[in-house]
Length: 285
Ligand code: SF4
Ligand SMILES: [Zn+2]
Image 1: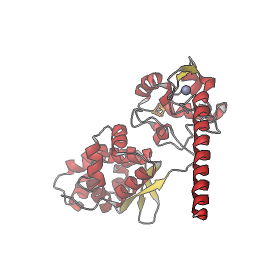
Image 2: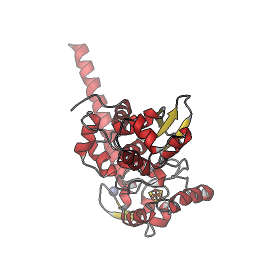
Image 3: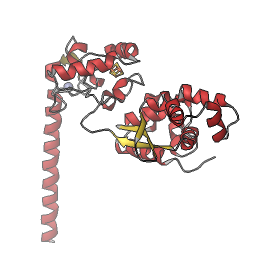
């Protein structure tokens, strides 16, 4: 049955659109089908909590649970891993909570409390509502980008970098910041998968920053890259930095950038002349 999607899903969909991400791109990161993402967006299905957390991280937001007074009681992974703390804070047993939620078996409660990643948002909300808690979405501070915001979307999902407040894209040479980012990776549950991914990710798709505890320089020991335009393999120095903080290099070589800039310049001049000619003809007529 179709109903209006939950406001949290609507907000996630909006943030997804604002970042020009397609259902397919979101689906790839969350390892679900694009159809599922479309169904969530249209209110045809309720997304599982695990997917919702990953989706929030992808659009630079985080989910948190707040009590009646607006105090944050759970955030990020705690939302799915530590639900029992809410019940315990009230001094209720699983049986008592099952009764209040009008579910027949306390096994339903124990399953959700064990790990709510697979629990649908609608069920999850019903669960926490009994505990007088609600969910909200908060934007991550923009100064803390993480590798998932980079141009590649094929990283292993569930990485600690998607939830941490640590800057995973430290400026090159800032050793203290790099070490802090490495520490996040070393405690990450998908570190091994990420390590094999980071070693094979094409250089032009590398989002920059610290990945699998390695800096850009460390994981690109050959220091060469194939230009996305002329497809020639050139040393890294032939690629300009993508931003002022030198977090990543561009996929297009400097020579191709120059050619494109020149072509753009010529096209702009031509357009300007055509407009001037048209204006002059109009005046003459
Ligand atoms: S190992 Fe590091 S970069 Fe890779 S997913 Fe985990 S935290 Fe992110
Ligand atoms: Zn090129």
